[in-house]
Length: 285
Image (cartoon, rainbow, N blue to C red):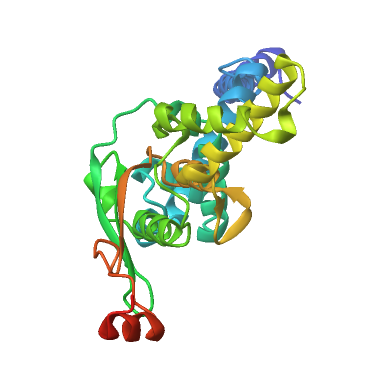
């Protein structure tokens, strides 16, 4: 058997051999604890993390939508409507790239601000013409917009040609708007109406109201913007111009026009009847 001294030496050697392994185990557990703590504890608060995550997704989605809109589609929409580049791009993004839906979107968006655009200066545009079949009636009119780019656009050209055709189809029209109707002419018409038999014996106040209504109707027949639009009689020419302003995004205005009717300036002699010619020859006139 072993002596007490031998046993003590053996135990001391065994403990000495186990100490490095224990230190290593404790070090590993500390490292694992630190790593786990770092994994468990977030660097930011949960609310902030969700906001950052949502913002990141929004940016990614917006970028994806923007990438879907090609420059070709933007140009096609601008050519069709005359809208600005950013407006056209936004319209296509809102309508998932559909050009037809984007046209309606631009129109609805523009109608709300069409009245505001009426105060702008429209100095661009062009002179447009329309000659009716048979070449016996022709029209020249000036239609304005704000920029040369819009003036060259397909939509503006269409609007201007529609206006020229409308003038040719409106024989009573003499001026652009009600404000252009001559006050002197209206005063003459007012005097004529006041003297008509159907108004005699009526109180002056009633008579004045009736005459004002009649004069207003006469004035409307003379003003281009008050006429029913030939392509859609549910709207007036003024409504049509306003809708074009909304769709294009610029003020559209009719400045002036002139009509040409074949033979209108020629003074024709009244043709004599056969009996009158015989009487003149025989001296029995």
